[in-house]
Amino acid sequence: AQSVTQLGSHVSVSEGALVLLRCNYSSSVPPYLFWYVQYPNQGLQLLLKYTSAATLVKGINGFEAEFKKSETSFHLTKPSAHMSDAAEYFCAVSGPERASKIIFGSGTRLSIRP
Amino acid sequence: DTAVSQTPKYLVTQMGNDKSIKCEQNLGHDTMYWYKQDSKKFLKIMFSYNNKELIINETVPNRFSPKSPDKAHLNLHINSLELGDSAVYFCASSQDEGTYEQYFGPGTRLTVT
Image (spheres, rainbow over the protein chains, first blue to last red):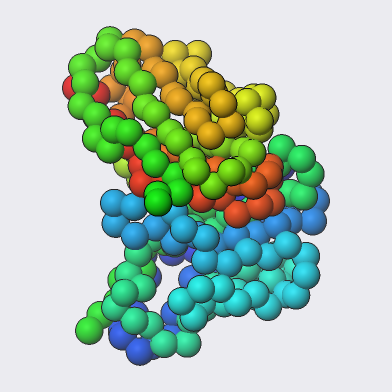
């Protein structure tokens, strides 16, 4: 069975500050990990994904995440927050086998203070 | 040139009615999905189809029936709507199953009164 836990349902940072959104996973098989972003009244958009290659994954809009097996974590970071980053962020996990479904975390709402 | 489209965007209906939500993707993908997002933003997969074959069928009431006339379309039909069905329903598609990036539609907000 697979699951993800996102720590903090709401994170607020100042514009220009570091963004850190936390995600821990549980998986009995080598995991594939994803971060998705959802802007208000829109569908989800893939930010980045880890599929057993490099442990540091760079995504769109300046985001990156590091896969740490020893900590079972896949935290999302961005060095400098922008107002346009305000959105809901979802961590997700799946397995490599056929028909492996993606399990989403409960989401973290990111707010940016001017 | 919308990649994944859903209709309608909003759907308000009364309990007991039957309704359908349509989804179309023009990406040439083989796999399509339906997700339900509740009021707390929790997102859960309902179904997935690969080349018109049902691959994932989560434990959802059998009032929900997906139909895939071809690999570019996956419709969701809901019978005897209940208050608890109120949610945002997202369609998504991917090139293949599992690990490939999923492209999401804009969602259909269903409100059952």
